[in-house]
Length: 137
Image 1: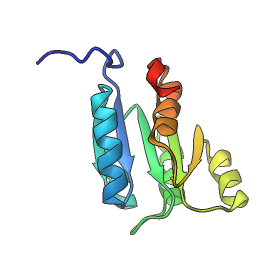
Image 2: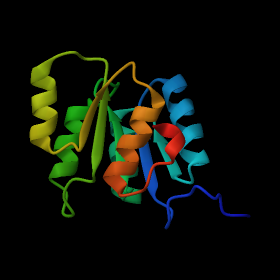
Image 3: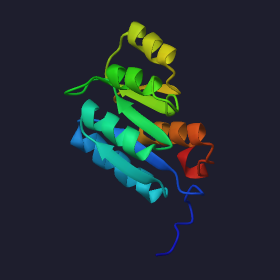
């Protein structure tokens, strides 16, 4: 299999934890096209399980999900032996208290929905130290 020319080297793994299939599939397609390995979980419990099993390089985590909220996932991950995996939280919630709590828990970025996919890709690239292509500017 040929290596994509725009891949982050070495390949980085991103875990998407969101219950919205449209957002997940859009993000997956864009990130895989950029050369990322993408894992998906559709609720907080499975997101936590995949994160603990796979130790991804980054987690994109929705705040409001079934079974376990993004905050509960963050709290659990923060207490793991390796510490919190770099995390970007995405949310439709407007509350500044939620943002403050997410930042207190250690998120690297907090992005409100709806968002331009390019904004999320730039944030992921920045957190992982990967150079964004010029066409995202």
